Length: 443
Image 1 (tube, rainbow, N blue to C red):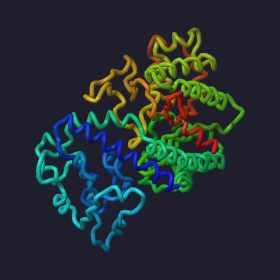
Image 2: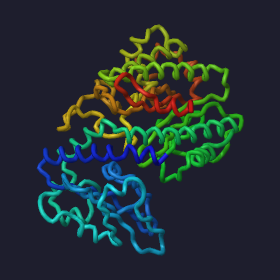
Image 3: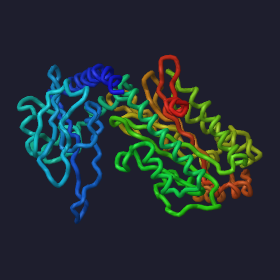
Image 4: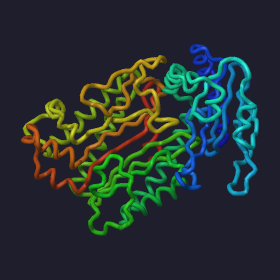
């Protein structure tokens, strides 16, 4: 597999360099210093928080687990990697850099974080990108730390993925799907949320701190909590109705973000509701092609959810358009239909109109939409409609004038299932799209 990434990486690096060349020239900087990040100690303790690398850093090199490293780049010169490798017998130091990417860098090894500054540019104007630390404070002016015009330009360019990045995202989906298959089997075996979570980690070959985001492993009504991060240890026994899992994997710092929902009774009405949502989600995915406004996919998702609410008898006396117009669909589908995906799970520039950072507004009444862009080839994003029975939102609906359109008896019957979300990762091509998630499930 490394041969494939070795072949793709050189062109990726040239693209990264060209994007930085342009952004630095536009903003008047001679150099950029990208800090990978540092480890933090817990309050009143000597235990470290899990290290999370700066996404700007890992766009250059596939190093995600070594703190106190820097990329130093001057246009026209070989990029420099300042690599932290201490002498330490309390913790195992990082191994020496190796692999297909190392020959493209001037690698300087340091054994203490303080020595990093010895390898920084001595003249010209430098921009520091990353978590501000003592180096940034002592060497640079305030305006040179994470300068917004530079970040806007770099973030905008990240909207279009290289072949190397698409390959990393593809592999992240393959690994995530392995975990999803194990999790689905664990649900059918009657395991607890905690046990399902452990099975996902095992089969996706990840430690918990390596996950791109906290696993959402929700049985029954817990699926109505959009970011449910509890892992109940007790097995549900016969009180096992539904299972929603939103979990992904990482490869070389690139994330997958995958959600599936299952019913215990595979012949029951909730299973049919899942099937209807899955079919609707696949229709939304067919919209992913160049020139389409992502907002249109979001609004079509609301129409799809509204049609399902009508067809399954949750809402009566209104057609789908009226259910959306009265914002009843927002009670059952309160989040955006998706987001950019890449070095970050919710990748940057979802609202950017241009390199300057001008914003494309969200449609009125849809405050949680994370992506408002016109779709281009090489963009990667999720498509994740949902339908939920959320106690607080249903209580609000029950108090307003639209309550009369809701079949509350039926809604009450479905509260125990919590909700449904189906999520795939999509890469847009010149003539359509590739569904990385369905491709991985089919493999």
